[in-house]
Image 1 (cartoon, helix red, strand yellow):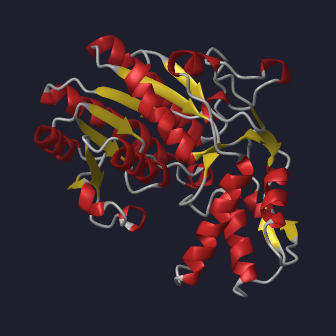
Image 2 (cartoon, one colour):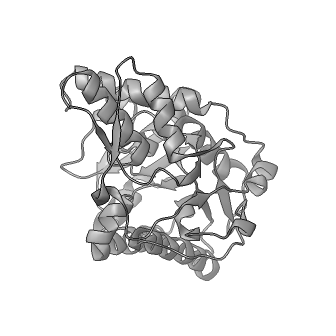
Length: 323
């Protein structure tokens, strides 16, 4: 079997590649990179996977690589995924995420292959839900509250249209908050961990800076998330969409307090207005029963372990000079 991963150099893509290499050694893992793509997350397996140069915004490059690989499964994880950047660069976000995915699906169609395809949408498509809509089901109204969320609605609906129009075996997910080692330091919980590690190392002074601490989230460990994605293409139904998320609910402020509890340094924090979004999503609790019924998946890693590993990741990065 050949598996093809877009976004293989990112947090989720690299963990998925790790998981497949470790648990399914008979599977040939392929991914796309650009000439400037950092390979830091893949150093431990780079000799066990196959990397190809291509870009989602270049249809010809995708056609070329898919003709060569002819994958049996595609995990489409690549995206401009930072919500804050989507407010300053909405057109680029839409082009990368929506047009990029259209190029990928057109390349599959034009090459004439029929791999099972996972399209990674996002819980951000639900936007700000009402209290009586929690836990959020897949049938909830979509109220995207950022250009990033709009781009994910576009991906989500376009994937469904390609399933209907061209019978491509596409399965969509709406993953809720997920994190762990390798998480980009622009995201809230990772930014917290990074700043704590810097203060501990004497590279930053107190206080650390935070945004909205009142948002409510469920958190999934990325290592549980990639197991869910593998099961998705093993067991779930093309044309359908599935919520995936954690079962531990807490505020962003509680996430901060847990991270601070792992430090022997007296960490102080202060809200920075520039870290507050023009519009925010503050209540994200998923109903994941549909996915669990079809796969039997359940998250296994506790949030405290996830956050401790995230903090240790940033400590290790700083110790190696990766500031």
